[in-house]
Length: 401
Ligand code: PMP
Image 1: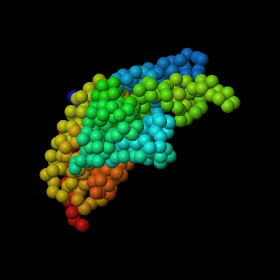
Image 2: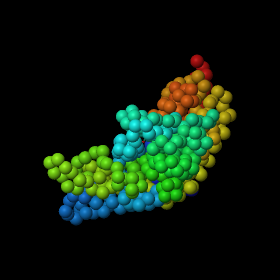
Image 3: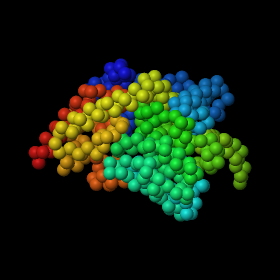
Image 4: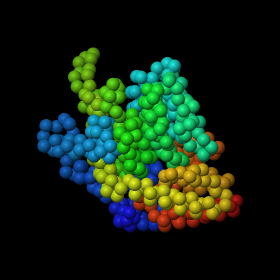
């Protein structure tokens, strides 16, 4: 990978060459090609899709639906498996509010984990409360990982849904998801996989994983904000009811009756996020042109360098030194994570502090929050050095009190 060339694709890095942007797990920066694709739609077309009976609208519709095909291909899916949503949170909620509220009943069980982002497990707290089902948690091992063995302990014939993360946004661990999906299917359960932190960083093939649902956001994979994807198996999407009603998703409408279009359109009411979908497709092509395997290797390499650097500083707790991805969660002993993060900002290091919308794992770690650094394709060894020096600075700064 030619990192200098890659960095040159990102206007934020061109205008802030000294910035160590280590918050890509929250949001990735955007390359020119994505910004240009969004800009091009607004400048050249800027009209609605699906409804207009004129050339510009046909062209916008083609671009928008081509975007769906490109994104489907990116995850090994077919065109009509891809529902556009506002983001991973909306996708995960759609599964719970539609599939969960329809097919989970009293006495059934739903399995989730303490590693989930709130958007992955909270919708199921709601479903289980409303439907009288039981929500069970996979016990994490001593490192805070989900294991197949632990999953087997909570899986029963009553399990209807497994709502689980592919990569934790706090710990960066990769869930052994293929085995878990296979076991879930053996008892007839469906798996809703949270791919918000996996799809941007590793090659995913939904058919190979055999997951039933996969949710992710555009903004974490160098795409625009306000766009996400719900992948669903066709037979499941077909039997799921829509949860929002209105323009574009309807087929026939009478005073007391209505019918809907086929999936994915029955889940997409109103004017869609046209420019964002087009931008997201461009982001997928951009990442593919660099290579997802190369990107994963690069992030892991930088994360490992950073872990080695942090280990040499006394008084630092690293919560996930063995993570397989580009995420490090740590604390400077005795220092509130938000205080630590504000000192990093002085050193032009962008990192995140807090519970990262994952209070269960934060509590599991016995802390009020962590400082999180996350690496992506545009980060460099120099970013790692700046980061490690910033941790030393912060340590010394707080050591004075
Ligand atoms: N799941 C995980 C693992 C995440 O990291 C995030 C974003 N932090 C989400 C879900 C929710 O994504 P969004 O905020 O884009 O809806």
